[in-house]
Length: 604
Image (tube, rainbow, N blue to C red; front, side, top):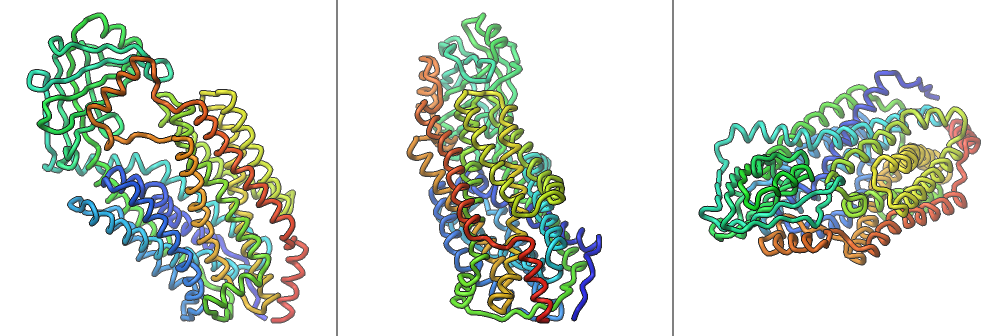
């Protein structure tokens, strides 16, 4: 009988660093692919929605097949490491290509490019993700060693996700700005009230950064305005729509520079002859500016459109290189210590084997439901911050909350879970996690119904929910690995790749279900944001008129209430279902696993 030694510190580090690289890549794609193609490359939002849907359907066939392919693999380097390395290299290349769409493409060509690269990215990610997690039972003992490595992998994956979440926007801007500063392709356009009719307005912001009904509208005869815009050729296609969302700006109005401000400039075309310009300023600046019935303003705007396009291209290349290096370390340092004789199976036989492993199916269903609950909230959270919590700094508050929530998730995986494991078995920790998440959602609902506007009280539900997410991610991975031993005892065959291929797919499936629920919520309650591409002069002037008449740009009370209900009560409902299914079906207690391990050793 082969005797296994415990994992060395080098092996643990090597496995963990691979997870950091793997989830850096995943988070970059998951969080920014829509933003890149829709907002930067100007692809149709509907088209991108269809692409994502097709990719999810394709995954239903691709992921299980990849599990079978890995199971059939036999090389001198083992079953898993060859595919881990091949998948990593190809995925890094596709990641770069995906964020390097040629700017000359538009319309159907760009849609086709997005579809092909995104689906290929999913295929190659599956190619390395399945063997990465499937390796755990093949080179660890059951029980706490396996639990420890699963927890380490999930914790390091959380670190990778957090790093990309924190660094991407800053890194993309920095890289893009540095490279574009050396480019001679920028165009400078200047508009003045002497040659263009500029409808100029100054609007007061309240202490929360929301527009008030105090609006100054200037007669064209008393308007002396100069607007200078720097950007690429793509920035000046169709409607000229620039704001603090897509450009950096500096301005003075009547010699005043506001401490808190926003700007919107819209012109239907370069030769339209008429433009709209709105300055949003704090009350102190508004009081000084309103002392005169005329306006003298200088505004400079630098489009960030090409900055972001170039920044994403080269940032994705950096992430891809790090990904290859990190997984390379994993492949060099990790050896498959035990020879796992896995019988191959057709796709039909594979699904039959999964259905025959009732414990694996229980965990798969639990993972789907748990991730669906989490993704419903994450998909709607940005709308909650923009339309409900609101304020001019809602983006900053949203980022602040996500930073705190990500830190709690990592802390839960790296600290809370090990501490809880010293006092409780895995089943009790699972229940603690589920009830903590439910408590967090109830607190979130209570704060939102109470009309809380400060972001800091929401750290409390964020602590409970994201702490639970971190703990349950580790627990579910451990439970899934345990079902491999159960399946071997019951069916006489180990199906690591088959079972772990389902983990990859079900997480994607959960994100698709959650996106569907979120989109239905947005449609039913008419919660939508008008993007810059939809802004034109008439829309801007109507918006200003509405503000002047004290019609605040927000969603109505019933929509706010509906948003709160869906993002809190729906996840609670899904979590309760997951809890009931798990409690009635899962039987692999620590004692039961010890019995299974002993029985398997006696057979070998």
